[in-house]
Length: 134
Image 1 (cartoon, rainbow, N blue to C red):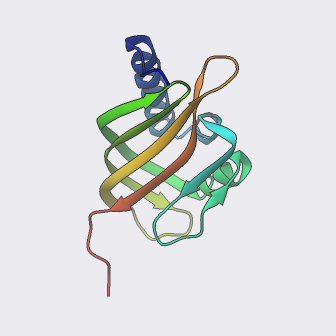
Image 2 (cartoon, rainbow, N blue to C red):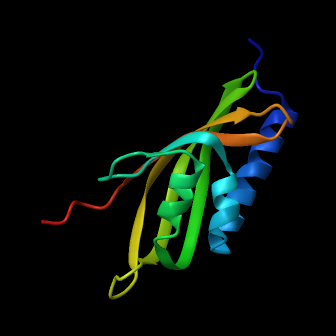
């Protein structure tokens, strides 16, 4: 197994930056395309979302996104698999919510190089650093 090359790391950073840009543009279709067709997204306090369509449907429940920031603390991997670990901060308003909510926490994503050479997310999960409400 070969370690990630500097070119692999640069491509992963570019793909991750494109994901953040799509989130901040509230372009849910483009965000969903960052995931592989059979990706799994595991949000806190919910069942996992399996597949790009389910992920897109979940994203469609965001009525308004005020801000989304990621700080990547680590990118590593080998061959065609890599992981990105870091921290996030987000402020959004889900459909039907009376106002915006803010969250911050940690995330872990597994990325895979596809046949066309592009990197896509195959597994993603995150957890909040905020205390659970009563």
